[in-house]
Amino acid sequence: MRLRKSLPIVLAGISAFFALSTWAFASPPGSAPDDDFHLPAIWCSHGFVEGLCDPEFAGDGYGKTPTPLSPSAICFAFNSENSAACQAKQFDWNNKELAGSRTNEIGRFPNGFYWTMHLLIGDDTLQSAMAMRIFNSFVAVVLLIITAIYAQPFIRFALIGTWVSVVTPLALFTIPSTNPSSWSIIGLGIYWAALLSFLQSKEKKYLLINGVIITITGLMTINSRSEASPYLLLVTIIILFLHAPIKEIFKLKLKYLLPIIISALAAYEFLTTPSTLGWSSGLQGGDPNRTRGELWFRNISQWPRLIDGSVGGWPLGWFDTPMPPMTSFFSLLVLIGFFFIGLRVTTWKKNISLILIMGAIFYIPLRILYLGFNFVGEGVQPRYFLPLLMVFVGISLLALGKEPITFSFSQAFVLFGSLVVAHAFALHYTMRRYITGVSSGFTGSDKTDWNLNKDVEWWWSALPNPLTTWAFGSITFALAAFIAINYLRKPIKLSQ
Image (cartoon, rainbow, N blue to C red):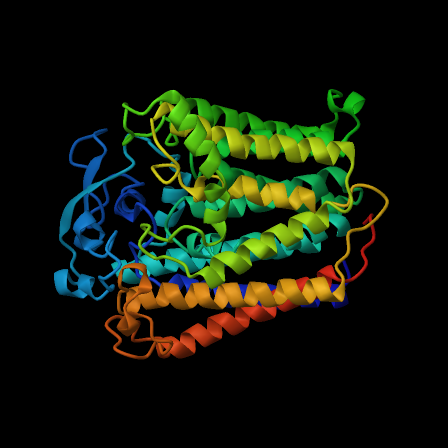
């Protein structure tokens, strides 16, 4: 890819990094789901370290970590009316005393994510946690830029379209966080495109770079969450199916060795790590008095909420940061718009692949809910299936035939406007929730003022005021989205 064509992608990447970094600072440490487990797991991932972690008893899943990481430090969880200022009232971030916490010592999650984040721990607990958020933002953007530059043009089109259409707001909140779902989203959201480019590459440079990318993103996926490994296996099979004629799939070509090795590692990780998603037993908290028929009917009727939840239909964080209808409506409009534009060009392989992925997104959560006697909204969360949704949209945007997929000016204008509006409101509501807290359902007028500088209870002293920060994040995201959608309007070649 020539430099002239690479520059817009690099500029979009820089803008995207600034936008993700704004999301990183839009909420305090502990705001991501289950951070009362994930943060201590990071601090204890290397075992006993003086001043950082004391496992107490080997293999019991509990240990002592700095007081700001203890469960009591997340005083705003599940309580929308509590701003992040409650942390300052309870503890000092410089407190080096160790307090009891749950850890990953018994291996409930793969340890790779935690082990890597541990390398970023410094003398300051708060700065360490924020460095991890910035690091994940940086990794996501760098991997996305490199993959886009060295992808086949039609794969680049699908990859960029995927990330534009699916990230608001759940992925934007989760990627710059200390939750291992960050790596699931980054890893699988890029792996599928890098793998297809790797298989289709003819030049050694493209082959090598895409090989490095699928290795990195594959390992990130495997080392994030237990369910990410079978997702990777499914996606690998589908990409091989899309790439090669059926009669060629079972031929042992040297190019297939790398995805086979990554798949073997994924299979090993899945078989040796306890499932956190309840594949065979369901998740706790359900009502055993619910009938099987009631479970199936109600959950099937409400299943779309698991898709809608990725684009603003569910609250963020600890389900205590609700998104406004301006976000959920326009984000869903963008998602559906991209999907149907992609369906303008189909092949029988593409259709079968989409059916397989959507079948997994449909069946797996319903099975887990059924086994645990749960309804949609209990236990099973949209972020568990967001990586598969990204692959689904990506494949829908692949032009596998002779005809390229294109956007008209009107389509691009509507999609860009919808995306910018959805993001701006999502970021504003997220910041408002932690700056002042919000009344239940955002009904209190004192909690929904447009001016984020009003009645500030919590904010970062090193950053500009909240409203300026929000404007910066909104503008940088809009710039990245503009460059991306403008690129998608240009006719593409179907070969490298």
